[in-house]
Amino acid sequence: MRRAGYELTAELEGSLGPAVHDSDELLGTERGELLDGEPGRLACLRDADDRVASRASAGEALLARGPGAACFFVVPVLVSLVKITCGRGRLMVQRVARFLVLSALGVIAAALFSAGGSADTVLSCGDVVQADTVLANDITGCAGAGLIVSADGVKLDLGGHRISGAASNAATGLTVLGAGVVVSNGSIDGFGLGAFLKGSQPTLMHVEVSRNGTGIDLHPNSDGFRLLSNSVSHNRNLGVLNEGGASGGFVAANKVVGNGRSGLVAPTGADGVRYENNRFSDNGEYGLRISDATSKVIGNVANGNGASGIFVYEGFQGFSDSYLIADNSADRNGNFGIEVSKNIYGESPTDGGGNTAKHNGNPLECLNIVCG
Image (cartoon, rainbow, N blue to C red):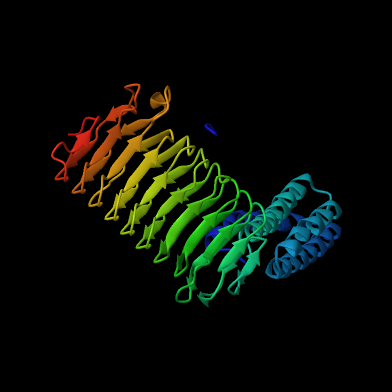
């Protein structure tokens, strides 16, 4: 910073099934050879078959019980493997193949359970989340805070559900205090502030933040933040506010539209942020406003905003080369489509080309940048 619960799927079973069936056919061939004059080994084989069936049944039961039990499936299978010898090298190899397939089923099922995350959880207004959670219900009518994520590394999947404040609620819908938190797949509305991201490296993705006072507030500690594929709309004040100092972020594929003031504001110190393929449209003031915050602004659309669609200014000497403005489109804005100001040293952010603007309030369309 510068300046002062899964199940084993049919597809998986199908992919492993041929290996099991092939093993059975090979065992059948070996059984036919053993029938010719080797009753002792035939008895051993029958005993081995009984133990295979027993282990398979036990394995299926353990898999049904969950990931912890499934892990223990591998151990007894391997123990049985050592015990079943029956005196034939080729038979042993075939038994090895069968046991390894069964063991693989146990390991894969355990991995699937482990990757599946937490079961859906019912939460209420003001609850504190400290572990990976999938929300099971809408949270509505909150008179105070919505949800608070306090621990590091938590993944909170809103499960398509809504966090909603009661009328005139001035509190915050979602507060992220932990570092490396990921929140996804839901909506937040009706609060004084929709989402407050304070911990470092937070990710907010596929979340609709609408009809709050301000949509999203990035605290100066939230370096490395990611805003991905969110809808930030119809908030009374700002859509997104970077308080200044939250640097190194990535803002991509968001729709920031219809907010009462500017869509996104990045003031001094919000350096090293990349804004790519977003839509900043129909906001009351600027679509995207960046001041003294080195940025890459690439491939965005900014239409129908009350002031300029995209505004970029760098007042400090020697920082203009750290900007790139390229391939943006800005139409029908109240002032310029894209407004890039020169500082007192005659420097202005880098024009990367490919920018277009038309039908804006200022007949120049763009300032200090070439627009087609």
